[in-house]
Amino acid sequence: MESSAVLLALATGAFAIGTTEFTPMGLLTVIANGVDVDIPAAGLLVSAYAMGVMVGAPVMTLLFSRFGKRNALMALMVLFTIGNLLSALAPSFTTLLLSRLVTSLNHGAFFGIGAVVAASGVPIATWLGLQLGWRLAFGATAALGLLTIAALWLTLPKGAPGTRPNVRSELKVLMARDVLIAMGTTVFGAGAMFTLYTYVTPLLEDMTNASPDFVTFALVLIGIGFTMGNSLGGKQADWSLEGATQLILAALALIMLVLPLAFQSHIGAAIALVIWGAASFANRATRANSGDASGAQSAGPGLICECRRLQPRQCSGRRLGRLCTQPRLGL
Image (cartoon, rainbow, N blue to C red):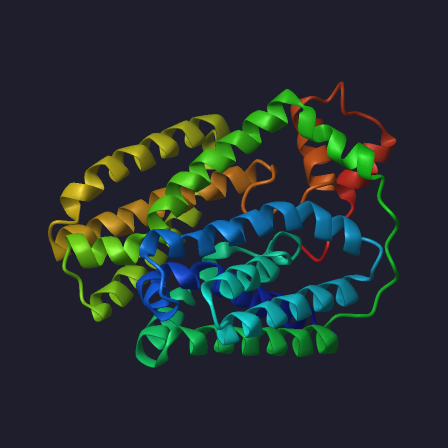
């Protein structure tokens, strides 16, 4: 099977996962009204998804490491599709919250293709949700999951089963000082980005008096900023990883301080959101470039490779070298 077809199948899955990750952020007000909760409570949908990603990334990677790549990826997308269908049919906020948790479990093990491609579907999903209802947006995302399952089955070879990982040695690296620092930087940097993105719709509605059309347009502008930042972050990381991280985080902090003033007008909000999106994903790109657990990187071998890069004496050896050269779950 041609590699381009395989990449297209994987990109379809990444697109679907990224869309379901970001969609509630654009539809937060609509969803809050739909399940009769206030906006802060609706924001817990994003928190639940994040918790599922955090727990699911290492757990699902370890559980599915014994499967062939095709079977593992298809199983992950089945879980994704079920979660989105449950979200579309959820009769209450609690059910929706649990559905989002189920949906998120596959994220870390699958989503290593690139968040920029996935985030490009958010304005479409937001527009669809605003026009036809948020339930249909989740239903359409579930349909993408079914399409991905079919594409993976058709394009990926069956492959041989994997080997059972040594869970203790895989997770031991989490205690390394430099790995903890790298992960902490990732957590706080991503926290700054997602805190704003989660509530960008109600902020635009309250502070900028934005219409639904402008909210959709603003999300498009953020996506443009993401694309610019992904490229910029990669180039800056080639120059100096540590320097680029410090510079970009400082820029991200500065633009977030200015945002309340920029949100006083449509033009100011539009310009600020492009710059903020660029800074946010430039930070994400530099962290992904370092090989740590940022973005959607899986735990296990990825963390061991990070330890080996940062602490070669403590993390040397043939077995670790083999782990660093082994491809992870379809990523």
